[in-house]
Amino acid sequence: MVSAELTNSHIVAEFEAKTKKSKARHLRGRELFPSGVVHDSRYMKPYPLYIDHAEGCRKWDADGNEFIDFYGGHGSLLLGHAHPSLVKAVNRQIELGTHPAACHETELTWGELIKLLIPSAERLRFTSSGTEANLLAIRLARAFTRRKKLMRFKNHFHGWQDHVAFGSKFHSGTVDVPGILSGIVENVIVADPADPDAVKQTLESDGDIAAIILEPTGAASGQIPLGREFARILRDVTEAQGIVLIFDEVVTGFRVSPGGAQAAWGILPDLTGLAKILAGGLPAGAVAGRRDILELLDFGVAEAKGFDKVPHQGTFNANPLSAAAGVAMLGQVAEGDVTARANEQGDKLKAAWNAVFAAEGVPWATFGLGSSVYVFTNPDGLDIDPENFDATLQPIQVMEIGGNHPACKSFRLAMLVNGVDISPKPGGIVSAVHGDDDIAEAAEAVRASIAMLKAEGQL
Ligand code: PMP
Image 1 (cartoon, rainbow, N blue to C red):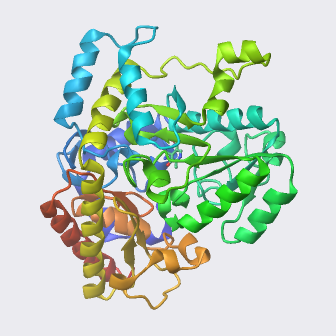
Image 2 (image 1 turned 45 degrees about the vertical axis):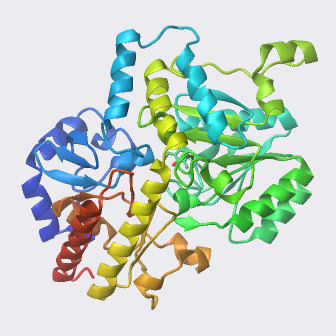
């Protein structure tokens, strides 16, 4: 079954003609995995691509098609695929063993780099993913404050664990959440960032709020932008109320700036969830933050002060392969200009795509902070100039539906037909190894994709 806009589409037919091996693999995958995928975001119609190998900013599918990659390993890649420095570090480590079941020096170097880069990181704990990092941050906040509730924001994504698996783009409802205990749902307030006064009032009047978690640059890593002022308000009120402020910097960490959004804005949270670039494309996460909060994990402090420590295990915490890749990655973030370079290339990409939208008379606009790129697809047909569109000045309600144009799915497929893999938001992640030629080629793919959509009457 394909959705209405994909039925009888030449774009789908061209996609299918190019990707026969992916289709065959998808049929096998469907016998194993629900919908044939292992991550909800990889679900797509008519079927997802199977990628065989990747290098730099390119990847190749099972049929040998080449794509410029703007999916960026779900945001985990800052140096593209198989960067020689990371390949070397991981190869070296694999020969030294993958699991000593012990402490190891690489975790120290990795931790020291995080402490150096992330301004609020006085202490930290490694986890295996961003989901786990945020889960641990929330548990620590509850234990620290001895309060129960968590405040989150509509559309903000923090992973798939029970406290955060609803009220996001993936499950917009906040009642009858399938599979989640009502006791958890009842203790989570999903607030609307469009109404900061109401947020402030709730924080000031409800004495049982342990923590607030947010994506500091806005939902979906800035697709629905929030400015510094919002974070400032939250910082002030949480400080006054003794509420733990958690920045989810799983995507923004090391990307918005080497020290994440908090360094760029000069606003320090109490706890930070990190992942993705943290380990250069290998699996890992970390909670970093205030020493007095992280101390709840400390055996000695718990014994001396007479409290039950917060439990936390994890077979693959700081696993040596991720640690080796993380050290190689963050070493370059700390020493060089890789973050700035990715942001610069991101800005060029936005300008190039917007020039195409303007030239083709399509009222869409590419926006985003630095290397995080989104396309505002303007489903309500607002009168905008793609080259002068400021997403931060739009009402939140406008940006909330910015990725909802009925042609979005076809646009993504058309881009694949034209040799470019974007994310389904729609948008993309730009790395430090995307060159000017890649950006120019991707802009031509946008032009060709628009022509295909226009030919089908979808635009
Ligand atoms: N927070 C944010 C902002 C994310 O984008 C993601 C992953 N897309 C997560 C948390 C969850 O991280 P992970 O997939 O490593 O569990």
